[in-house]
Amino acid sequence: MKGLIIVDVQNDFCPGGALATGGGNDIVPVINKLMGHFDFVVASKDWHPSNTLHFEKWPIHCVRGSFGALFQQQLNVLKIDEVLLKGTGNTDDGYSAFEATNMDLNYLLKKNGITEVYVCGIATEYCVQATATDANKLGYKTFVVADAIAAVEAKTGDTEHAMATMQQLGIQWISSNEILL
Ligand code: VGL
Ligand code: ZN
Picture 1 (cartoon, rainbow, N blue to C red):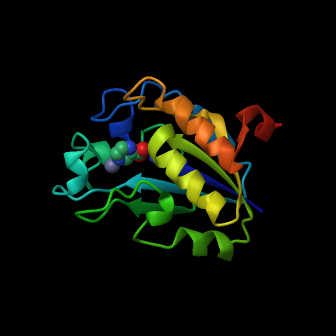
Picture 2: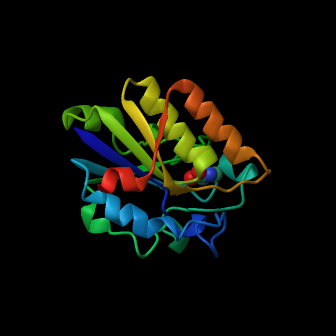
Picture 3: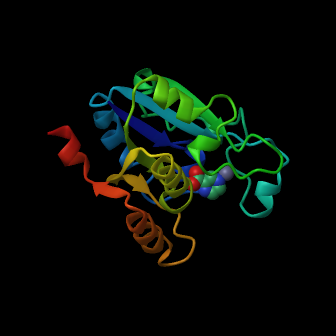
């Protein structure tokens, strides 16, 4: 069984947001198309308290309950089976969806018979990478959907480095076309 993990497709990571990625909006229609092709769909939210050590590293973003923390408006939330909240403490970054505090993602995937995990969303070199790396470590056959991710690219080359690191671990790249066939 195949599971789709949609990472942090929230206003603050889209153009105009506090920690915007250039392609944040463009991936949403792709993700919407993907959802119907999976047995189980989860979406994570970066869900920070207003005071957290995380904001010493990053501009203030995705404060729980704020507009910036809402899913990007075009995302088809009706197709999401479970929402995972992460980065909820005052000290944790919570980059990986497997660090969600409202439920245990590994347990949830196991319970639903998922053995293959497809990761998409934002940001390629932080939360997407951390989520795919954890999925791979936990033994799931792990794919990153190459045209359904968006990067912050704080420094030139960050994305390329993240992609190479993931590939070295055995995480595979797939394009949405291959899934939508
Ligand atoms: C993220 C930086 C800070 C992400 C979250 O969703 O990739 N990046 N918080
Ligand atoms: Zn964050």
